[in-house]
Image (cartoon, rainbow over all chains, first blue to last red; front, side, top):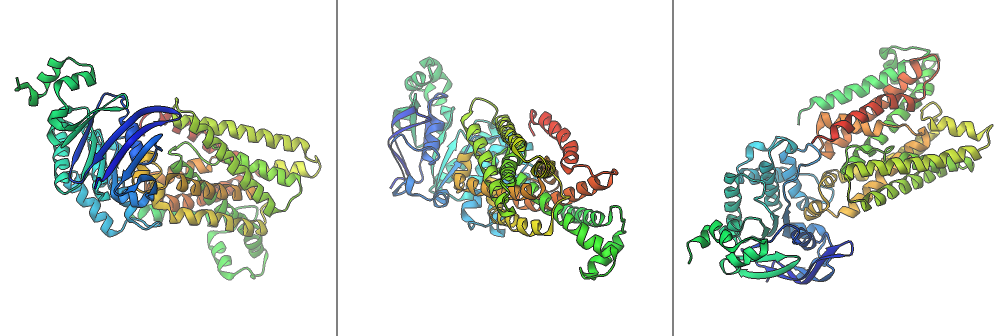
Length: 254
Length: 328
């Protein structure tokens, strides 16, 4: 059974159609990586899959039910989301930010319990930022914020995660840390749908790759068969030889 | 979480209450005030009358109005993700003021004044929220503030129209006096009728206080964390507007408290709403009692409370506005 599934999905907002005929399926223990140029419709697709934007046509299924049947709280225990690191508006501590990931597991009128705090601590430790717990989220670096948001998703304990360019604002060391964490989550059986602008990251962690251009999936399948230099060149409007030489995976091939 | 901010807030509140009960043309020391309070309302003598019948209702009104405006201000700031909004900047106070002025013009009872104030406040915040939601190409923080200013001005014009229509001998003075904002005319009956409305707004805010934190995130983020964003925001708008309307109905438009106090409270206890809400309530109650005490004792005549809070509030708002350009 798919964890999350898009069937003939048309997406958009405010009367404008951003993408059409999108078919995707994500299984447990699988990483599906979405590649595509800016403005290709990734964010709109994610917002639709999260149930924040209604689909224009087609259907989103989560687990064995249509997305629209899921109550918000139930959905949040199943499906987590990591946005691109944002600046934050109010000066919450990093611990409070991560504790927000526990909300769907508290009572309706609840507040964080000792157990919630322990889960949050563990999530922070797992990403190597335990020392940031009492620091203020708005005053740490962009990379640290991204790690804190990933820790929040871990604290959520969802079986499926959507990650919007999780490595975008990170330095090299933290990119590797996040990629290895994604690999570890996959081994734990978590299904992961992520977007990235770095094809080599997709090759590193993805089981499958989908190429999204102008709101359509132009290719989808096993990583190396799908994201070939010629397809990537067409996707990003680059020269094939430049793409091939910048990807170590392909440069050794004839 | 250290305990000192709570001790400080409790101390400020106590100080404001004792000073408020002691200060005035018949000055009483804090020790005397405490003694008279402990003696109970049946105590004999002029001092007991001054404390129990003249000053206590006014101090209680200050506590109630200050807490209501500050608590609703903290909630508006969180739910609109905007540290520059407050009941008055969003136009809620003007909307509630128009509702109340119409009710006074029609000679209605306080319960109906409150009801119309609530309806006017809801109309204002609903209008601001709808308009601001449609403007996407500008800084959302400023759009909300500007929409609030415009809607507030519109409702203020409505109030001015009501004043023109009012009977100049009886109604006009009543409306004008009340619009200046102040606690001078509040009776025990006003308090008894306003307090339950403030409490009715506060209860959902306290129950949902952890979730209010999540409204400061982007909508899709809060939704993905399990919050029904439109429903939660609706409940909070109704609660905060109820609190604002209850206070406008008895005290007129007292500006700036709902903007300033949550900021100061955030500096003390941080933005986490289950701490911010009680801190805002305590600080707002203390601030308004102190401001009212100052308003009635600083000069020979009583200064309008709204004027005093504006003198403190407007410069502070400009300072916050200047700072908001930089990342806060």
